[in-house]
Image (tube, rainbow, N blue to C red; front, side, top):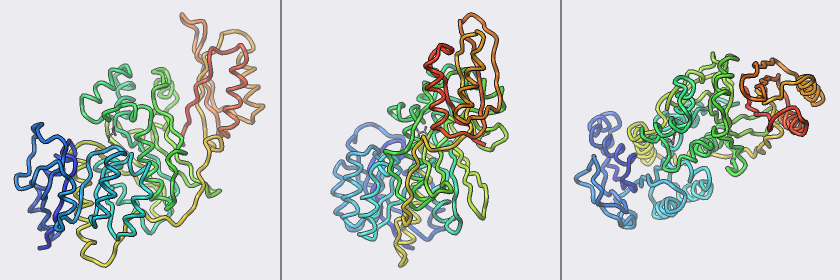
Length: 428
Ligand code: HSE
């Protein structure tokens, strides 16, 4: 039996999930892997708040350095989150010769590069399965299961909070704020829910997935991010009328011109696409690759037990390779793809105008679309009710984003619509 000694830093929700699995599945893990996982330290700055799970033989301390100086400790589990102290902890752990397991998506997406470099220099591993989609083994799938296949695209519903909100708005006609409150109560929204609703949490996750799917460095600052706060209930219902479901999608695509698109935006998903049936707080990731073709990964993307499962899998993986001659950080980069600007992408579009109900409006709008080579696929105009404008909804065939933006600029300048047209991308 090979013994593996661990230090956990961050005795919060996920930390408790990890402890629970270590205790309840100790025998199972031993029988399956031949490994004895022993938690020697639990480090947290708050040692007084009562937790619902304890690991009696571990030393509870607020001094992380004690764990780093202990030669017996093989792996440090970072579950404190954020991009400040977590960075220092991982850096010092690697320098002290420890492997690291983390679920910290913001840190890896924004500041991961020097940490992975350091890990490589020190021949240590950083396990990060828990950083994307909680319990869904998506990192392992891309790194291991698809190691022999070329990935063309990754389309994901990777944020449970926004998926929950959009599901409740569609199915129960709940107000955005009420649905967000429910998500916060259920415990999957971030401490600062702006990260969820403005799309940044999803952006962190898709940047990490794009890096491993395309083996290239992704500059997180260049990821295009659009959240769900500017959507209206009518967009969700118009989408339904057109045969689509509105989702917040995280997209990473390798285009034929060898540029990568990495973006997060609301999108109309055809209702027969597998991602359309990913409801509530669940996550789903659709990968398109050459040999396997389409494959879908689905499950719980947040919470103590699902994310705890991913953390335990990394600990086991590291313990296994630690005893072999293969050392890898599992973030291998040999491509140098450029990131595509949002204006250069091509897509189908849904556009909603609040149009004044008078003669010539539709013909002027279609004339401007034609000027920019935008072909219209459908038009719906609703009858006027109490407002002085009518909703005019158009969908387009594939068009250049630059062109549709220019068309909306031109239309905004004319006296035909109230405000700017609302643009939502459509995926096939
Ligand atoms: N706030 C995140 C979500 C938690 O809603 O998906 C998991 O990263």
